Image (cartoon, rainbow, N blue to C red; front, side):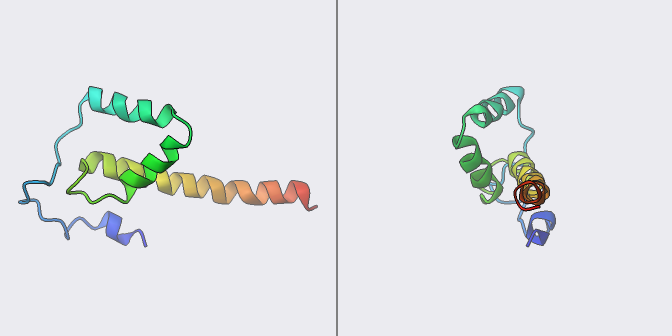
Length: 88
């Protein structure tokens, strides 16, 4: 499932729409500002994670994908803890 996220060979770097430039501090502050807003943050993190790298900055896509992986790991670790408290 995540192998397509890791393999970069499928992307054509000659494409004019492929944005591999370094994100500025202003752009990262905008991303972090969006992450503060409840519900919007979850929608946007998945939007950026599953976006085509041709449409969104590749740095933001990779950051969002790593965040989704960590979020999934935390949720998987959290569920058994909650179930153990309610179903001893």
